[in-house]
Length: 418
Picture 1 (cartoon, one colour):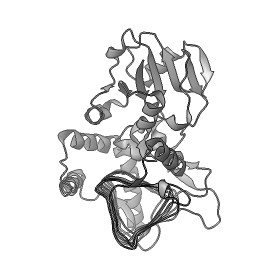
Picture 2 (cartoon, one colour; picture 1 turned 90 degrees about the vertical axis):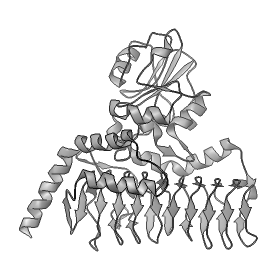
Picture 3 (cartoon, helix red, strand yellow; picture 1 turned 30 degrees about the vertical axis):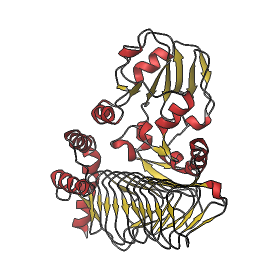
Picture 4 (cartoon, one colour; picture 1 turned 120 degrees about the vertical axis):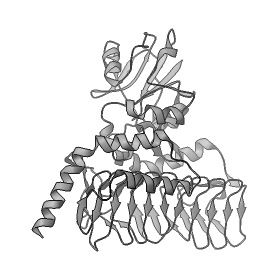
C-alpha cells in the first residue's frame, strides 16, 4: 500500500508557521505531523501533496517521496491522509472508504487510479465518489491546537521511542528528580553541574550534542533536540526545543523549531516559534489574559476565539525582536518581521516582512536587506541559504504584499496624525 500525505485548502489556519513549510512539517511533541502519520501507518510516505510554490523545498527535505506527482501509485492501493490528522490518536482504516471531518477529507483508502490528482480539489472530487464514513480521531483545526497538544504528544513520543537512561555525561552534582526511567540523555549530550531534570510529571529527552549549563531546570514532558544549548534556563513542562537552538530564561508549553535563539532572560509561554528566529533579551509574551477569558487571534483578517485561556504568540521564520519586546496574548508575527520594543505590548498582528518601529508598522529597508541578513544568520550556523530558499521567501513576499501594504498605509496615516 502506498501512503500519500496531503494538505487541504485550509492551510491558512496554520499561519504564520506554514508560509514556508507544509502543514505536515509542523512539530508536535518530539516528532512532526508527517512522522506521526507514518508511524501510525507503518511505512514512510511515498507521495506528498502540497502548495505548488513549496514543491522545490519540500522535495529536497523529503527525497524519498514524490511531491505533487502520483504517477508511481498506478496499479497500487493508496492511503491518502490529511496532514491535520494526528497519527498518535488514529486507527488506520482497513476498508476502502473515504473518511470525512465535516466537509474536510481526512483520509481515503482506495484502489482507484489516482495518478491524475495534483491538488486537494482533485482529491476531494475523486474521494467524494467513494463510500463515506465519519473520521474519528484527533484533528487539528488551528495552529494553536498543535501547540496545546504538545505536552500529551511529548509523552506519547517518549513511550514510542522506547529510550531511557544516561548515555551522555551527567555531572555528579546534577540530578534526575523523579523516575530515572523517564529520562533519556543521548550520547554526546553534556549535563553540567547543578542541573535539575524533573521527571515527576513527564519524561525528558535530551538529544545528542546538547549542552545544559548550570542552574538549568527542565520539567517533563520535554524534548530538547540535537546540538541545542540551554543556558541557565527554566524550561517548564510541555516544551519542544531544537535542533540547534540556544535557549535561556523561562519557557513553558512552547514549540521552537530549529536554529532559533532565545538566548537571554524573558518569558515565552504557550507559543509556537519557527526557524531562524532571534528573540532579543527580555522579549516576553503574555499567555493569560487579566480577566482569565479565552484568547482571540487575528487570522485571515478575522478574529478567532481559540477557546483556550492559555495562548501566547505564533512567531514565523526569520523574525527578529529587539531587547524588551512585549507580545500580547494571541499575537501573530509574520515571516521575516522585525520588531522594536516600545515599552508597551505590540499590536496582536504584524504582517510578514514588515518592520514595527517607533510604534508603527512600516516597510523597513526592503526585502533584499532582510534576505541578506537571513543569509548571514544562517551562515553563522554553517548553513547555506540555497536559491530555492531565497525564491521561496521572495514568493511569500509577493503573496503577502497586499496584506502588508494595508498595514503600512495605516501606519503612515497614524504617523501623520501624531
